Image 1 (cartoon, rainbow, N blue to C red):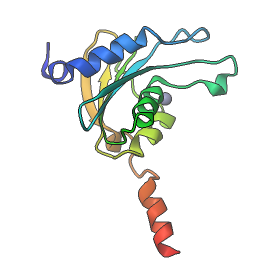
Image 2 (image 1 turned 30 degrees about the vertical axis):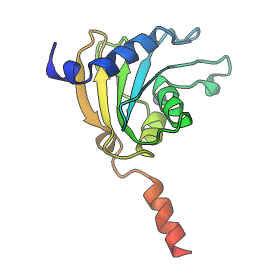
Image 3 (image 1 turned 180 degrees about the horizontal axis):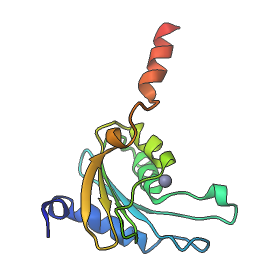
Length: 141
Ligand SMILES: [Zn+2]
């Protein structure tokens, strides 16, 4: 087991386990994710599709929303597990949701073989629109 898999062992396991619950009757594209909060709690999530496709929710956002709804906005890391040959990256909407909680959130990307690599949300979404932009406007009022 390499160092990343060891350092993020539990987070990766929860993401992989959550993937089993993916509700994907339309695409068959299962994804699991797991968020780690500042105090070490872990929240898993899966993608949830809908007959009205636009109502579909990604695994990453499910996990983030579960953490936030339990009172945790201090998000340290998220692991993403898919069944793709290449490492699976979060979509644009999920990147926007993640950067709301800090540009230094660690993202553990995995491929179908469970091989992991690391990046940060700040690297995946440079020059982003964030709450800092909102504060700037409010300061000007
Ligand atoms: Zn997404």
